[in-house]
Amino acid sequence: MHPKLTNIFISDIAELRQLIISSMETIFSSFQILDLEAPLPGKPILLLNQDNCLVIISFDLHDIDNALLNGLRASEKLLREAQIFEKLYPALRKKNLNLRERIKLLLLTPADKTNALGLDLFNEKISAYTFRGIGVNGETMLMIEPEIPLFSHSSSNKRKSDPDTYREPSITSSFDKSSKPSTDELSTDEVLFFQRL
Image (cartoon, rainbow, N blue to C red):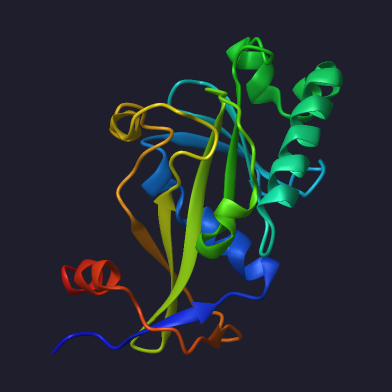
């Protein structure tokens, strides 16, 4: 018997934050969380990834522009006040990181909002992922996929060459039942994906 699948509209930023935190292992092969709600624009998640880069995860429920602008402002503040943040997060000091060279921005926005931003720039330090809320047998889950190309003209082969910018689609469970089902049908690819679970 196949699971019953529906699209779910995630309307609560706290629920989204918890889903993202639960999904870290599907995006990074290893990581060390520094802050789940950093005192920076947009209250991003901060972590050190497998390459000892400081990753700012900036996300928004409605607008990729907000995720990008908050992420860029957070990066700027971190660089400008590096000594303060090294005291706040001792792991940065222990790793002896050059933040200007080892800071990355990861954007996470709804799947239907990612093409709204008409930027024509390439930056190896910015990667973008999309999310969709999926209801599986009455439980809310999060499907996360890399978004290519948002900031790059490079070929799609780059998706699989950089572990920070490509992982297989993933879902993560949420036990918050406040999300509202959508009437939209799942695509054929999404149905096949969930049938393989």
